[in-house]
Length: 154
Image (cartoon, one colour):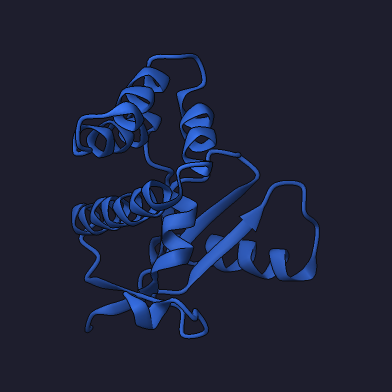
């Protein structure tokens, strides 16, 4: 069997979802991501649950990355910034309570630095996803969603 294609935005989104309201599974044969929702009773959900129950070895559960890994991504980003007020502020925020929300809030007003953060974050998350897929021995390629207008800019 050849390399399967997995839509990167779907996988990356689930790798960061700590809400507990949804769970993702990768179809090891097709690369399709199946998502189930807690307390969501729809016919489509029943079909997904049936697929997962009938052939559990075919599907790989997507576990969110550890929050420590997410924190490390923020630390590595800040460590790579040039000396200055923005870097000092972001370092300080990482030591406060609720570092994730404080970090995001601060970046919201930092224009170009915010864009740099998202580029860095997405690159690091893709790297983690690729490593995880290798650990799981899944021969896969992350591909952009064809309807994504930003996909051709990567």
